Amino acid sequence: MASPNGHGEILTTHDRARWRALVAASPGRDAFFLPEYALLFEHLSAGEETARLFFWGDGDDYIVYPFFVRPVHHLPFVRAAPPGEISPCYDAISPYGYSGPLACIRHSERATDLWRGFLRAFHHYCRETGIVCEFARLHPFNGNHVYLQQWTGGVRAANPIVYVALEQPEAALWRGFNRGNRSNINKARRNGVRIVRDADGAHVEAFYALYRATMRRNHADPWYDFSPRFFAESFALLGDSISLFYAEYRGRIVAAASFLHTGEVVHYFLGGSDSDYLALRPNNLLMYEAIRWAREAGFRFFNLGGGYGSGTSLLRFKAGFSDTTTLFYTYRKVHLPDVYDALCRCAAAAHPGGEEAWAAGAGDFFPLYRARGMERAAAFSPAQNLSRAGEGR
Image 1 (tube, one colour):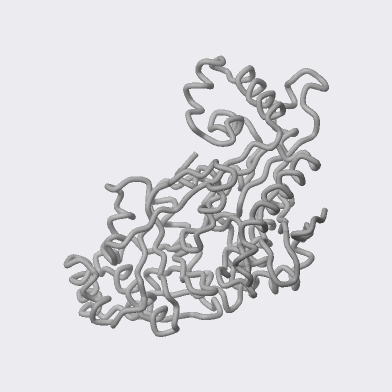
Image 2 (cartoon, helix red, strand yellow):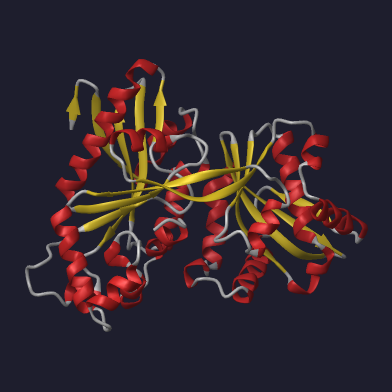
């Protein structure tokens, strides 16, 4: 797979050294692009999905794209289809979080040709390997949605995310918090809550217990019920790219959160707290100290993420730290339209409520054949929930 503008190459998590070096050389490098991050979720899928990195370019200028390949042909509604109607096929999805294509272009005059070549080459790769379609949650800070929208379309604005710009004096940062948040931070301090950064995850077991209790309390989607192994592996694999902060009160860990950090951005990743101690406001102080640490460490942005509506308590909590938001975008592309349509027909035919009920329930979900009703019929697969987590279907 080559042209005058570059060549194509596929890497797997067995090629972590090269994968890591390609990401590290890009000015937009981020923890979500790392091979160790992909490997973490590859393990989570228990072999059901495989992580790959598509490379296009040459030694000086290139674009890389991490994604997961998911088998489609084993889904129950496909197995129920007439023999031979659906050949073995797959779909692609970006890792949980924010990623999409990552460019390292030292010669700006080559950017247009490289992006065009990348998009053509990846489309050809998907068609040749039976990848029906792809869905990606794009990175909110590296602008990869611009070229995708310009040359291929399929880009959609999703919900805004809240972030803190860290290149400002600490006094200005403090003034950027709303009054209620500042009051809660001061309350936590008066109550004797202490925040500790645990760089190596020594307290990951306590963190897991808090996280699990929080997911149960909030009736979270089962996909987010990560195992103790997932928590331990996140620190073992990601090393210097992840930190744990915890809130301690009278010798007891009452809240904890993990943060991913590589390049210019720190991302709030996972968090949990003990409901018996929420009145002490440990989460407010914890997030404040994590933001202070990120600023002092030289990062540019602290990404608190978004929510599923302006009225949700989680989004209100995040907005207490900043009124600065940016949109993140999702990307969808059908590479094999005939197969995609056949899969949708099979999904509709297999729906217990009939085709009309399937169409009404599927809405704007992408890919349409993995809409909620058909997901429930399928064997559980972690990546199935990733487009749902993208807030844009």
